[in-house]
Amino acid sequence: MSFNQLVADDFVVSADSITAGLWTNSETPTITTFFTSSTQANGSSGNYYLNIFSNEATSSLEFAVTYGNQYGSGSELYNDTVDGLSYTSTIYGQYRSLVLGDENANFVFGGVTSSDFYVISVDRNRYKEGLFPGSTTLLVSGSDGVISLTDNSNAVASVEFNDAGRVFQLVSGSAGTLFSGFNNQGYSVASGSYGWFLPDIATYILNPRALGSVEADGGIGLIPVTASNSDDQNPARFFSAISSSNAASFTANSEETITSDFVFVRPRSSEYNYSSNPSFISGSTGEVLYSSFINNPTTYMTTVGLYNDTNELLAVAKLSRPLKKDFTKEALIRVKLDF
Image (cartoon, rainbow, N blue to C red; front, side, top):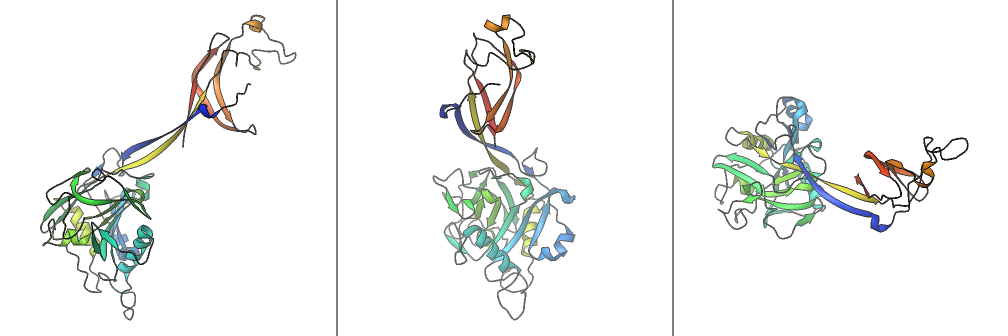
């Protein structure tokens, strides 16, 4: 066994973005059927969110939808004597902490502050690292028509960040291409953007004002009843808006950054020509078994081992076929470590 000390020039680090289908059937990036579970909806968690499946099997959980309201409207109070504390206020506070990291901050969609929102949270099993910006097409229907939503990642010069990572505005369009029928940002000025796309936590936060205000440009009549502390079933209303027969289509891809460490091993002409293998030398005397190998040895390299400074084996690379080596040959072996 022979050793060579690696130097800085022997290492190259590369990062590649890998995309794949997001949903259970990852061969296609689009799902067109949506189901809920009556067991989950009628259980205690149904007061907070609805799980959405792409078929009737519970193994096909794709995402969850929910509704949050800063003042607790849109759901029953936990305690009739304590105003403002309800399921929707809990959801609002949860996402405010997760996304904004400040209990006094507000959600501002395209310059318009909103006290409530809808959420699509993709199931963690559907992706490895995050969602791929520019791949989203979500159809939402209402009494005033159907609108196609995407993110504006392809139209911004710089990326915004908050506690949840990257932030993109949800706009009218598809697959990252903005529809310019409203303004140069692709959304209604009166109601702001249609929400936020947060790829690093696989979450869409939608602005009910832009979706529901019939008077505003782009409004589609999806108006949540948030003025009372009764159970207004806003998650169910939103589920109906994305699963109706004329709008059931949700396209998105996952994204993963694969970091590769390339290590270049360079056996020189004078190196690695002898072996301690029993087929090369005598185990009892240490002599070369074949006299022709004394001055003209030939070895076949099959494995590269990478060690640290304390001679601990860290990684092993197997060559696809044995590599012939003698004094007339040099080699360059590229070892790729993915992590």
